[in-house]
Image 1 (tube, rainbow, N blue to C red):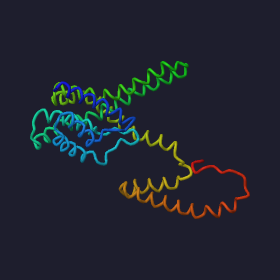
Image 2: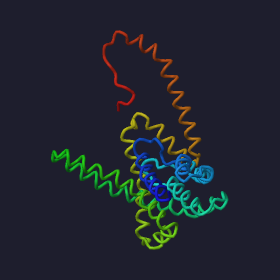
Image 3: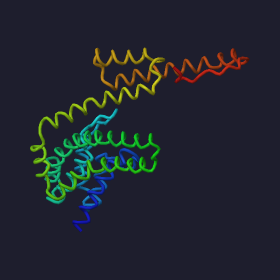
Length: 267
């Protein structure tokens, strides 16, 4: 039974990162991962207490724009497995889960960055095969990407299942500081790249004024992001109501005009 549980836990670790990148059925939210892990381990009550603790830590943390953040889903999964294997007391289980899960979640940042770096080479290899007209080879190369992402969570989970929390602490001590610093720098650059890519698909020229206002409010006035979002909603609502009120007049005036104007996203 323990072997089956270990296999299912590792399989869940492999699946959750693929789901997060694609289907988004279970995702890697601690609360959802905790419930599934609790069913696998046969102690849903303890698992949900642990998952709730990690969920509170994960609130407001998101990998927007390609940013890498602590993998609290992985931390929840490993913490639940080790804690339930170690004790059945909820308070002790929560303490053990935090002691084991937090280092694993922090290690998940480095593994996520490493996975994204490796997948950039996969993308270039697939692009090269596409340019050469080798479509079968391109499709086979694309399978490497999900495999890499899945291994970034399955491998540390497997090591924790086999060796417990000691292997995580050993890895963090053995890996050179320059390597982890390099991954951290790369992870800090990813949000900038993500925002730049996002701006390529937005009507930036048309709404440059709003973009600059938001930047000034955030960078120089220090308004929290929630306040900026509320201001953005206010501007959008005002623009929408003004646009709707002027539509009938514009339609009547241009009823005889057969020209077709572009949509709101035309530059």
